[in-house]
Amino acid sequence: MPITEPTTRRGFLKLGVLGGLGLPLSDVLRLQAFAADDDEAEAGATGKAKNVVMVWLSGGPPTIDMWDLKPDAPDNIKGPFQPIATSADGVQISDKLPQMAQVMDKCTIARSLAHSIPAHGPGTVYMNTGNKPSPAMRFPSLGSVASRLLEAPAEVPPYVIFGNDRNGGANAGYLGPAWNPFQVRNDGGRLEVRGVTLPEDVTVDDLSDRVRLLKTFDYRMSVLDQVAEVVSGIDKFQTKALDILRSDKTRNAFNLNEESAETRQRYGNDGFGQSALAARRLVEAGVRFVTLGKGGWDTHRNNFNSLQGRLLPPIDRTVSALIADLDDRGLLESTIVYVAGEFGRTPRINGNQGRDHWARSMAVLLAGGGFEKGAAYGTTNNEGMEPDENPCSPEDLSATILAALGVKRSQTLETRSGRPMQLFREGTAIDALLG
Image (cartoon, rainbow, N blue to C red; front, side, top):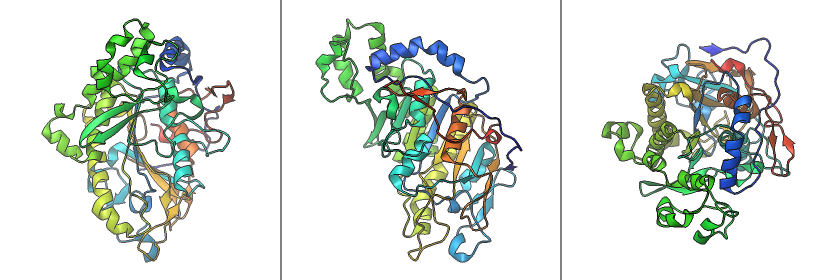
């Protein structure tokens, strides 16, 4: 089902939050508690989502071969893949994504996304923050903004990423390191939380220093258990900060052995599948924003063999399993699943049977969290070169995700120096995407 944009769109101020003062995490937690009433007053009344699972396709996925095929284009554009019908009326996707086709009635494809930065690092920052990179300012990621604004249970970190920080795009920017994500690594099949990192000169002995407490963490949970006696005299907010890293609630989310063999198999037994299953468990525990990734999408050569052999099968299996599982558990209505990369790839196939960088047209997948179901928003022209109907930008899409999370559209941010900032310098939320 295609989505058409209304003739007029509601005007509004840019989204944002106050905070990010660069304080020790314990003091930040104190400020979070004091600011809870103000944040609640600033939250929108219509947001249906509480959580986000972002699936990041690093390298620039060829969405023309995934979500927006062009079967009537010339051979040097359309490629060998064919569109197939899905569970969403009128929405077709690649024949290499048959399991995704079965859950498309729960999804929306935004096919008219475009920007002007076909470079990996800057494009990654742009898509993760909703702001064009600037040498004068580092902007916060959507996950950092969500963790700053949305209240999370005390026992869990608000923002978790699997893997690295994606060229800085996952970090908190001018909000300060207190809002950086907890990083998780897969160590031989065992998921480990690395924690939040601030200045390097903090040791275990500093845990008793109220001023410097939690300026940095790069300890595993087991290490924190061994030094628990150090914090006996620390006030409740400092103890709360430690509890985020030490709680059974957080650890249990990573214990995938609690899942049935059928469920683990459904997601896949590789690192990507394990991460997606852990992401669902983290959402159940109350984590607000989780990012996991699947790299290898920079297909300048052998694009179609790479897609068919190693890239699309895990996406087809794991993302469809995640969406279906969230839906079965009654969590999809409150959880946004967002599948994106830093840019798309050239409609024209190069001489190496590959596709090169192309940001002027690309598509992303959205499911749950109040987004329209079984729909496609926008179109590209006949050759997929550029948007045709309802063009939208990373700013627009980012504003829409935060609107779905209930963020009031008039909020603003402050840097640690007190400079007021609009959350997005350009763009507005796309009301037609929100059901």
